Length: 104
Image (cartoon, rainbow, N blue to C red; front, side, top):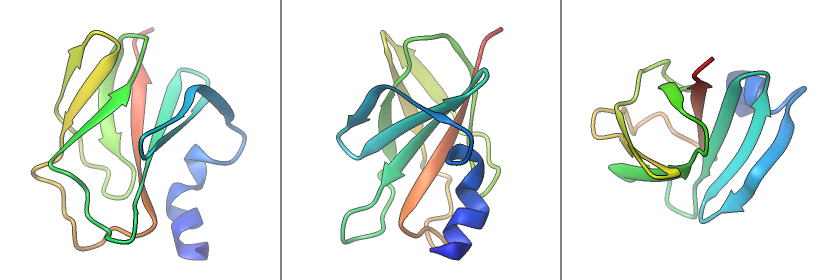
């Protein structure tokens, strides 16, 4: 757990919980104009090829915290469809965090 917090603490420490708080396997926090969407794993640590997350605001970019990789996405109403097909799945554990940078 300590290793995970060192990697993902940015999305935990000094953040606020934001709506929709928790849906499906995703929990949400924010700090300034950055939104964090944590995808929590069940028993099997496997990130789906496509992940839906809620983002009411316009999002400029999405990045996976664990790898720093930019994640392609499409906005569909208040949902973002993240394309994670190119993400390394071998180093994931507990949860993955997507960093959503809102438009100014």
